[in-house]
Length: 223
Image (cartoon, rainbow, N blue to C red; front, side):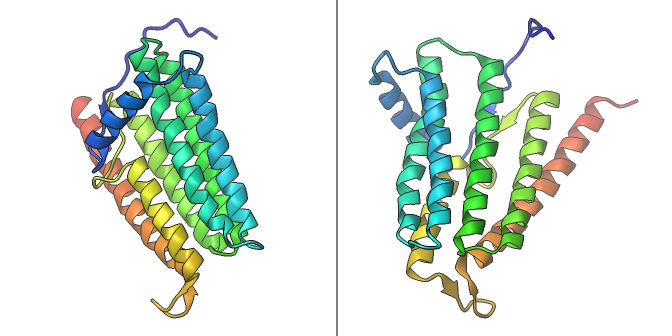
């Protein structure tokens, strides 16, 4: 197998609420990291943080404060996952194909760890966890296929990107720790109700995105 074919990076469409502030913060941090730290270290740090968060969720079944430890690990994940590309660009050490592939494999493993941990925690039922996981992966597949076929990498929907989702998850962790169940729609697990709502929103976004991308490609390649 050869990897010598010309590769053109797709523009990143980042329109999330915190994009501007986050960009300035990442540039500030990247400029001050010691030279021995490289983007691979940060990518690995982000992955380990997500795997540890999954373990903490699982441990919350027996020790509920572990839910709050996840919030610290989300900060560590943000640091590693968001800063690796910024550092590579700042030092002109970019590897577009390697970075795109590894970053998104790591993201997939991270969300798998989080959802499996929540399923084991007792704070979320397995059917809800799996429904969210399938919907999330369908949207991810659509994004990656669109990146290849249309040439644009969409990083946010409805002004929500990875950072906003981390913030929402952290708020949910605190709320579930204080009140694991809600009387909204009857006596239900808080994470079940909130995750079902999130799954429905993701499903609508996915269907809309698939339709938009299909129309775009059809118009670009009329027979």
